Length: 66
Image 1: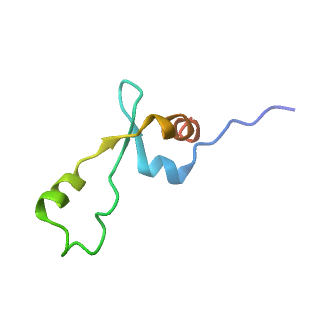
Image 2 (image 1 turned 90 degrees about the horizontal axis):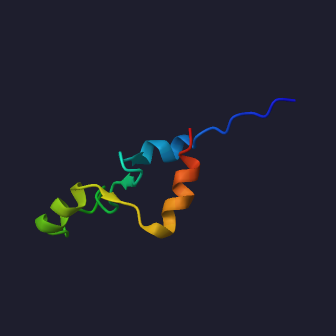
């Protein structure tokens, strides 16, 4: 019996991208609604993507495996 390939988690693949060096990029939270009380400086900072911390890195990379 042939072993099936592992499929990548489709929800995770829409939210995370791998960089060239193998790090995981993610978008920041808290940018979707209730924006009136947040300062423009804070909203500008939320636009930029950032990398995942080490605690989540291994778990997310495993579900992104193609």
